[in-house]
Every structure is written in structure tokens, then in C-alpha cells.
Image (tube, rainbow, N blue to C red; front, side, top):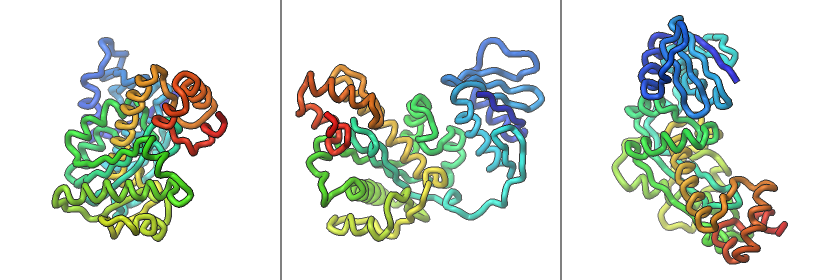
Length: 304
């Protein structure tokens, strides 16, 4: 995949600074530099045009396309054409917020990770320069690179539900959404009480209705109230995007640990390739080991 578009002078300087340590030794004719980040080759030309080439070109290009829009009220289409941006609205992206997001709920192997973060408006430029966005739209390689930088600067709290505890708690009376609600509430409550953060809103990426969420946590003694539930919040609110990235980073680390424990690389998701590995683990270590590293209510377990 190849994506080419022209950048403004404001963005050009940021791009030059960002890729200064990733530059190749040789520079193509009429280029300011050529850099390599993971599987994407980036070439900035003297004309102001920038080219992204590689399987993840769209992901890397969109980071700068989004920043161009914020800096200069321009919208760059994926084919490189340009349209005028709509007037900026007063959404949560312009506010200091606490936000939470989770990973692992769709994976047979591995725990469920929920993270809550506080992001102040003063952190916006730092996060945008890192390319922070929904973790599902960033490669795992990129997450492993930027998450430690985020975790050094952004206040966060993470709650982890290991597989054994998940299997013990999951039932008809305590389904996945109820477990998620309890974990989100726990992470948000602990972060909120960690410091006197000056935030405007608490935001959760909506996975159930507001009424259902509060019903799920009605028996929890320490609750967080006045939450804003928003669809695709990880694309709109930087605190939720940071929570998504940190959760994914910790999930990847936990998956490595579980893989080491059985000496088998554990696949993500819940597809056919997962069935094959589950069968191998069951044959080598028995049902008890699966109970410790997998979600036994998934269809993968039933197919065994």
C-alpha cells in the first residue's frame, strides 16, 4: 500500500523531528529524508509531499492526517486529495478526562485487562505526536514502542482478571458484560481516588446501556457515578485511547508469560487456529491447565 499527501509547514517540522532517529543512511533524490518504522517506509520530499509505503502505511499515515486536521483545519483523504474540515466542535477531545477501556474479552487465551487513565489537555500534543489512537488501529509492534512512554507520563490504574478467576466467576448470573462493568468501575474508582485530578468528564467506551451498567455494579460498595457512555470513545477521547493502548500492552506481556508457561505460542482471538493449540495444551497438560490460561465458556472449549 502507498499513500502520498502534502503536509503543511507546521506538520513538516513535527514529522522531521519524529523520524530523526529512524532515518536511513541513503536519501532518495529530492527527498528531505527516508525513514523506516516497522514495516512502513516513510519518504518526505522537498516539495512537502510525504509518502508512506508498506502493509501498515494507512495506519502510520492516518496518524499525521489526523494531526494535520487538528493543526490546520484540513482533511486529507486516503487517496491524497484534500477537503475543508468542518468547524471544530466542542467534544470531549478538548477536555481533560478520565477514561477506561478493556482488552481480552474476545480472546480465548489470556486475561481481561481494564485500564483507566487521566489525560489533561496539556498532554494532548505529547500524545498526538506519539500517534495515540484506538489500540485496535495500531499494530502490536507500535503499541510495544509507545505504551511505555505513555505509562511514564500519564496517570493510570489497571485491573486484571486472570483466567482462573474469570472461570470461577462467569455464570448465567454474572456474564461477560457484568464482569467488564465491575472491572471498569474498580479501575475508575481507584484512579479517581488516587489524586485530586481536575477532569471534566469520566468516559467509558459504551459496551452496554447506562442503566444496565449501574445495575451490574449495584452491589459494589465503592462506585463511580456520573459516567459518560460513548460509542467509539477510543477514537474520540484521548484518555480512552490511552487506556486502550496500555491495556493492550499489558495483555501482550501477559500472553507472552502464558506462552512461556506451556512452551507454546498462544494465538490471539478465538478462531480455528486457537482450537488446534487448545487441543495440544489439553493433551500435554490436561484440562486443569486450560482452566488457568483460557476462558472455558468460549465455544473453543466446548469443541474440545
